Structures are given as C-alpha cells and as structure tokens.
Image 1 (spheres, helix red, strand yellow):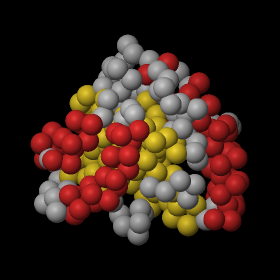
Image 2 (image 1 turned 45 degrees about the vertical axis):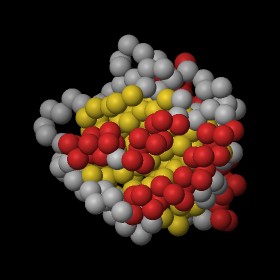
Image 3 (image 1 turned 90 degrees about the vertical axis):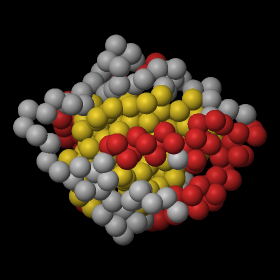
Image 4 (image 1 turned 120 degrees about the horizontal axis):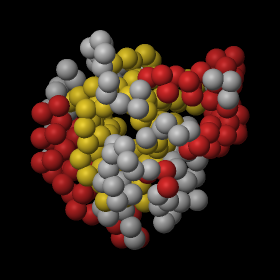
Amino acid sequence: MQTVSLSLFRFDGIAARLWVLAQMGAARIAFARMPDVGFWKLCGSGTGEGFRPKPNWGVWAILAAWPDEATARRNVGEAGVYKRWRKRARESWTVYLDPISVRGQWSGKAPFLAELAPEGDERSLAVLTRASLKPSKILRFWNRVPDISSVIGADPNVMFKIGIGELPLLHQVTFSIWPDAGSMAKFARGDGPHGRAICAVREGDWFAEELYARFAVTGSDGQWGGRDPLTKSLNPLNFQPKDAA
C-alpha cells in the first residue's frame, strides 16, 4: 500500500529561515533525483494556526508519496534533504498516512493511490484538501477561512490541524487529524461555517482545481509544539508558536 508522509519543520531566527527559503529551490533538485519518491510537494504555511493568507516564515512542510511505509520511513529518516532540514529546524514532526479515499487532482495529476480501509478499521483519520483558487474568487475564499479555522480550533475532536500551500493566496492545503470518520463528517457537513463554505464553493465555482483525500494514520516521528500530536492525552491546540499571529 502506498504511504504518504507529511513532514513539518519549525525554524527560528533569520539565518535559518533564509536557509529554508533557499531550499525551496535546492530541495527540488534533491527530490527530482530521489529514486523512491513518487508525488511530492514543498510547502510554506500561513500565520496563526496556518489558515491565513499571510505567510509564516518559520513553518515549512514536505509532502511525499512512497511505495510503502518502510520506504517512507527509511527516506524520511536517512535521505539527505530530510536530515539537513531537521538539523536546521528547532523541531520537526512527520506523520505517516495510508490513502483510503481520493478524488480530484493536484497540479494536473492524481497524486495518491487509495485502497479501502479494512472493515472495522479504528485508526485515526486524516483529511487533506487542496484547492487552486481562481483569481476572481480569492477575496470571497479568504473571507470564509477565518470562520472555518476558528470552528476547527474549537472542535474538541480535532487532534491536529495546519494550513499549508505552495503559493500564498492562490494555493491552499488544509490538513487535519480526527479520532474517527464520524467526528470529522459531523464537522464537515454540519450547518456551520465549513458546511456553508462548501455550498458556496459548489455554487460559485471558486476553484480552478481541487483535491480531497482521506487517510488512515499509521504513525509519526518527532515532536510538534514539544510533543507528539497523536498522543491522545495531549492538547496541541494549546500550543502557540512564537510567530503566531
């Protein structure tokens, strides 16, 4: 089964942040030469909890698809690009994911190969949405996002969330982890800001391209906010980065 890794890195100080900004070019060369990786993306993040159009220069992400979990863990642990990023970062965290449902495209490609989860699967559920916005719809979209973000943060079920993207304003990726499909579906389809935003998107034709994917969470490495967000007894939403807006 294909495994997807999402690796997050937090950089402190001007020198480290300038370094990772330069890596947006250098790391592309490394991934282009990496034999095991399939689809991959280098992403920045937004301020606050990541759901803002203003860039957060301290938090960056690497999303990658691998043929299996063993290959994913080996490359994330040993590949030079990951080792260099971890060495420079104040902290880093990687979550490993099995794709179980995918629809849409990313940069004109189908990035993930989904396989149905086994019956009775009780693993946590991760949800990734990616949208390429039409320029004429940018203001409408970003007027919606703060309401959605505040509701996600207030939801007692969400275990982790972050907003990342390839380009500020135009490309937005939201990623969240939930204890089960029921709690996620209740949030997404309810008569709240998220549900109303979905209706507005469908009626207003906001996106030039979109992708929606669900994953079973298989494990993690490292820490975020000084802890592993997958540990149920922790509340990572209480952690506020120094550069949060």
